[in-house]
Image (cartoon, rainbow, N blue to C red; front, side, top):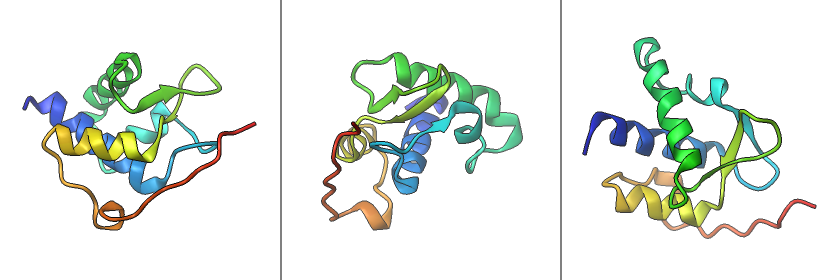
Length: 102
């Protein structure tokens, strides 16, 4: 996997750990700082923008132009597994049920 691919998995993991699904959302500039070295924040922004554009990725724009969230926790878990990542401890056997925002 490429460095950008590894970064995408890392960012999806962070979104999942933070529980950014349903009505919870964050700006790209905030997410790119979570556990990413300063010199990798440019590529992190690029990775997040690519994830939003990719219809198979579990990240979507929500609300404002630069505001994102996960499509679902199950989609995030599948993406992490399918792209060679390891699920965070707290997400391994947990089942998530979230209602759709109104």
